[in-house]
Amino acid sequence: MFAMALLLQMCRLFAQSELNNNRTSIVQMSLPINLIDNNNNESYYLFDFSFKVSFEKRMTKSLCPIIQIGYHGPFTFDIETQETQEQIKTNGLNLQFGNKFYFNSNNSPTGFYMSPQFIFNTVKLHEDGSVPGGFIRIQDYGLVGLIGYQIIKSKGFAIDIFSGAGIFRRNYFDNTLIENPSTINHNETGIRPHLGIKFGYAF
Image (cartoon, rainbow, N blue to C red; front, side):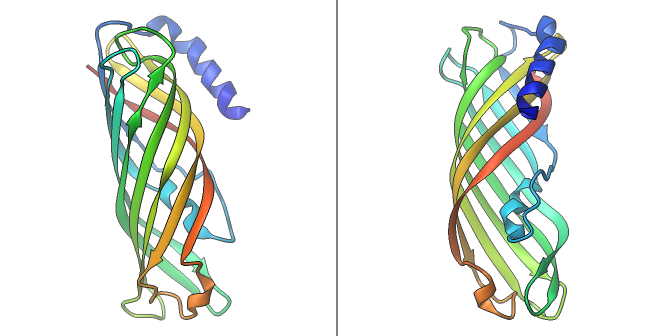
């Protein structure tokens, strides 16, 4: 409800500033945002912490491909187990691509849209605690469905506000970080909510 209210408010504020014909491409950046606090599985929201850059181009009414590349880290957080608490540093990559279907016939990518996208993440976690050289590599991939609203102002400033949900598959490798391997489910499937905002320039 909050996300939809925010979308509607942004629509009212910027509706008069949209461009419909002159700008067809957008480069945008999203900052790391953590909206999920899951104490049972910290890696569940690990991939919300990333700097991402995306590019999209509206080619036809129904074809607006988008690609996004991101960097996870460097961040430090705690993983608690039954035996100990470890301090973890992360680094990794994000890849996301799909298509945006806008609900209008404009030439520029503005207004309400729906977007199916494929997501792939790979992250390496290094431990600063009691297991020297220990690490875990996590690979995360899945499909996400987003709905959002994108605004382009008269000088090219662009804002994209979106929310949605996705299904993901996660695999854990090189489990040398935690002393007791049974504390980690090496393969899991789940559903993750998505909510965010991106800023950029249209041309």
